[in-house]
Amino acid sequence: MNFEATFDELYPGLFRYCHRLTGEPDLAEDVAQEAFVRLYDHRVEGTEEGLRAWLFRTATHLVRDGYRASENRRRLLEAHPIRPSGPEPPDDATLRREEVAHVREALEQLSERERELLMMRHAGFSYREIADAVDVAPSSVGTLLARAERNFVSVYRSPGESDDASR
Amino acid sequence: MTHLDDGRLHALMDEELGDADILAVRRHLGTCDACKDRMAELGERSALVARALGHLDTAAPPAGARDAVLERLGSLSGAEQADPVHPLASPERSLSKNRARVFRMPLARAAILVLFLSGSVATALPASPVRGWIAAGWALVIDLFDPSDDSERPIGPDGEAPARIQDGVDAQSGTPAGVRLDAAEGEIIIVLSGVSSGTLIVVRMVPGRVAGAFADDPATFRTSEGRIEVIGAVGRVLVDLPQDAASASIVVNGGIYVRKEGDRIDAPGPIEAISTEEIRRRVP
Image (cartoon, rainbow over the protein chains, first blue to last red):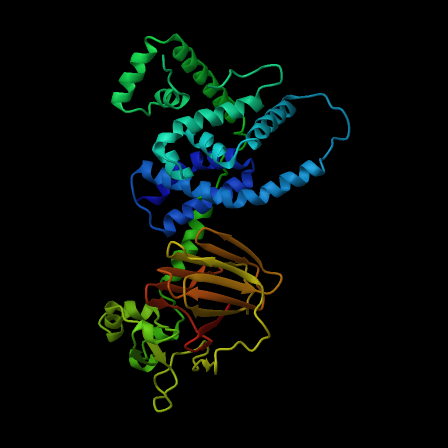
């Protein structure tokens, strides 16, 4: 394996996945780099697809370990919210931040596995790769994804819009 | 009419169905407007989720990430190569004069088995009998203290023979706080970073497969799958190396201090003190 070429090819996507999953650029950077260090340490070999799946699976497990720490921070913030000093006119940056917060809030309502399912699906992984990473049967991924997307949208959409009735 | 479930529709949408399934689902969709509408709804929902997740991409991958990773890997692999100041690599000394007498002993007969071998020596002397012992996969017990053979002793950091630990009990009071981790998949790495100069690293071989690392304040600890990290240790660190782990490494400030592969243990670098229970090395 040409490690440097593999890194250049796969790191941006892995970082993006970790950032989506954690919401924290520093943590995403740590996790993505750690996954590549382990790839080297464990002398993992394989096709690019295989290495990508291995890296994302490792990163998923690393985030699970680290996420519990950030869950405590979230609970603390909810108990002691930081309030702005006064009303400010919204600008583009503010609107973007609000949108990000809105998405994050919807993701927080999902289970850990549902978040991972959505992130990996939208990072382009196959059902078999997703099943391997989140420890479910491949035949159940379609159903679990449909459910995760339904749950996400039911929180994400503003009140007054209703999602279709589930079957 | 039996309708298609969301799981199969989603799998069709994601091109994850087998050929036979695809035919069956498409045939049904050709005759069922309700399922066709449902498929369209799932598609819109999936597209909404994709757009929402796209909002999260507010940070670009950091520049220099590759260099940071290569630097970490470089400091690890550099430490595995020959130690230029290791006294055993000195051309004036033959292997026999630098090695304690060794005994072959089946693993089950000894509580703690330790093999000390400089990686640089094994590389420099390919025909040495020590490589033969390693190739045979025997676990070895080092008898360091045969009073009738002063020439066969390992060498300490100042060229002197390392001190003998009389009974393997650490003289300092008690065991400091720390963490343990089960080497469930047979591999474990214990990383000590930010270790102060002069800190004593005491590596103990313990039965079983649970690794441990212990240090006094202000050291902090992190664990993840197959990995223990100790950050900022000062004074003393105790590391339990599990005998039953398939492989285990102890990395101190980016350098390999001890590596265990099966029954073989490598400990490149000067050793301060040694017994059948533990190895003591001090961070330069």
